Image (cartoon, rainbow, N blue to C red; front, side):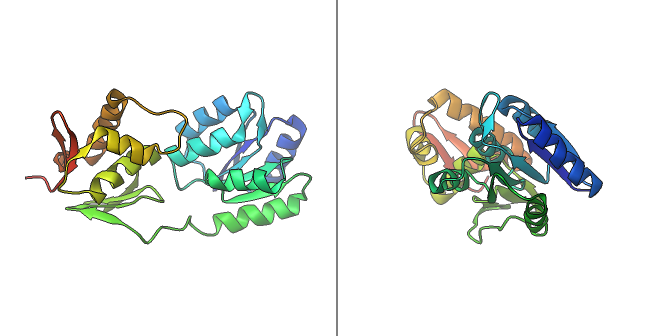
Length: 224
């Protein structure tokens, strides 16, 4: 059974969409705020999120960004009255897979949902490898000891930066500039260190691939 999250602050519309897909044997959850949507996404593995832009506490764009940080594989279909070209571009830039303007026909929404669910998000053919670890930065996928799993967006971007410069020391400042380039919130070196700890936990027995070079930064190299 496919699992859908409907993030919509129009209660009548939200119920209509939920009833329709429930009758199509989808498991449906609903909410109307950025905060609640992010909480549900953390707690559940949704196949697709149908996402309005105008929510009770902010812009659905924030939810799309969170999804791409948390789970690359979740498809995102933005459903919104914001239908200008620049609005759609903004949606696609944060990872939306489709953008449907309101008003809409439920039959078209159904077709688009089924189309997105009929195929996996495309995997970027470009991968980076080091020892037993291979990563696909665009999808968040990691192949570790022949087992595929998914990392959060910032963590895999940090790992990608280190892999691109493997066997060379990369300063904390260089990592931050590479991963957070153009962002409004620039992390401190301490925050970056927290990300590195999470990456090492994820890598498990292969955590020594990421080495700390005291006073300089980090280096990715095959563990000794």
